[in-house]
Image (cartoon, rainbow, N blue to C red; front, side, top):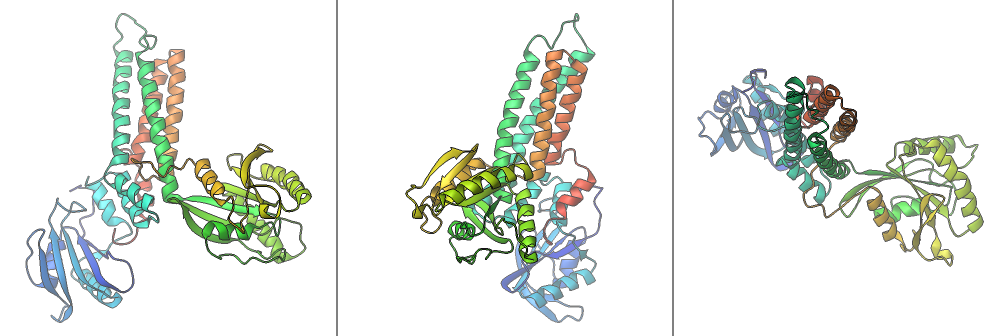
Length: 457
């Protein structure tokens, strides 16, 4: 057991709130066995199911169920663990948890079980995060990717990178400290070749991590445009439900509407916004203000124009498109959607116009919607057939990007013959990668990560 850990025993309800057939209270710590034995008034054999009466202080039965004992270090947390499996009623679980606390346990903080597992070297930080990601996964692809991360797929790829980086650091440091006949070790080509190999592998891991982050967080898609362009109809067509009210009256949508869907396993958070126009209506003005705020935080924006009126469509493209360019960050892609093509002679299709992708479709009939779905997946780099993907978080992407920048700097030092600066860049890269698995993590970072977990994990 890690000596830095608190020695107290923690307890929590490990199943979801509400009523269910089974509810579980979990104990972990040095006193877990004692508390479980007092509560059930019996001894436990490791990894055996024991049918017990769970008793209160007066010996009255709180509930009956199964007790399981997992001794240290062969448990989830690496400590002694007792699981009490009873009937899943809220009152029953509360009474059982209160009895555990009366016998000496304390309520666990969010994520504390997983944090103890990490601190006791039962899993690394990326695997611990995968526990929470598996619980919150909303798609089959997300579940499979989280399971691969939990099994160590992401960690193994990071560890391989770090091993190669350590070997290169050792070689560079040795060449600096023990030069042989003043040979320029940077000019011989070996360092540059090994550095390029690490760069290539880091790029591959980063691509997979971006896919994993997309599976975890999804893509925020904001639908914008003039009133009555068909934005709400497009939301309904994407979601497959009548989520938004659709009328011929301009300004029907006066606030943002949200819908969570998926496209072939890619989570999509669709936001329908108020029509963009000048208005004296204070409520509509607030809706338009919120529309711009949503677009500023989007992963992708759909600018919807009414293709049934060619002059209006051209005017909208000519005014709104430049306005979006001015107001939005350059890294937020914008796709122009020519809606209502069923009222024109234009066939559904995709083209380029004004440095943007233009997709002609009919939200009402559904013609061209598959083109839009394919385009959205492609624009985010989503690959539903990725067989060895893993789940990833934004902090992982940030760490990988910082590591990549360090390697870019390192290549410059190789070209300039600056061995000491090269060694420092490799060290910084090593530290950035170490943050992912927790090899080099600050206590504050750990607190932020595990505080996002649910109670009981």
